[in-house]
Image (tube, rainbow, N blue to C red; front, side):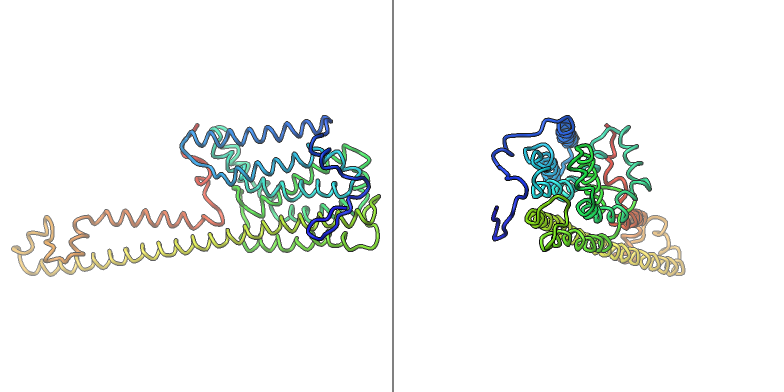
Length: 370
């Protein structure tokens, strides 16, 4: 038994030794290949950050820390001593799968790896990556169909013979791990929306999708904790309860992180919309003032023409400020300049309209080639 904050954990079929898990690791080919991929991803991410730094651009330290933590979670799940007991200890098995399905994917999504690839890669690589990210297939891979698959994955795995098959066949077990990590990463990519894709759902839709899946994900943990019968094949009742506790805690933590992030994104988006509204109101006020000034100039020009040549002569060059008024004098001195600024402001505001729902690719792709 292990007691954590009042909750008692029965580790299941076999005792779990922390010292052994910290000092040992599996050495089968699949595990070694996974470790190599994790190391390569870390090196590639670091290369991208350094490449941006050489260009004089900064990359978020929080994104870097999140991505490294996600890779560390993958290593702990499949490359550490924890993986040696996953087939004999149901609680360890649930810790491993929770890391792969929920915690590691959300951390990797916070790392924004696709954004880093687009910003740091040479131009010849940026173009195909952007095209791939803007394709309909990419939009579908992070959309609600994958969300539904993600919600159904863990119940189908635990409550069907697939669990027992994965214990008896190592190839099936490895494929299950790959499936958990892939589906989890695509799910959090779609929910958080931090990397560029063809179409991002609104904040309300993503929050609703996350909230709709919470009863399924955490509910499975509650069912396993409270069941009076053995629901999982070849797993004792005590181990089933302990595994349910692990599943419930990890899904609640990951879902809470996602919900807080979406609320913060929504608040920032509303603030940006407010600033755009204020800028647009200022531009419209400037345009109204410019139109009034030009109308006043036309009236003044018509009045001075009736006054005779002695007063009309200065109109060939510049209207005296005392005659035309301060605002009219400014318009005559540079009538085109304010209009050009207003036109630029209008273009900038029009571009900002797409910032929340379909951000322009110039946000992610640098303007200079490698």
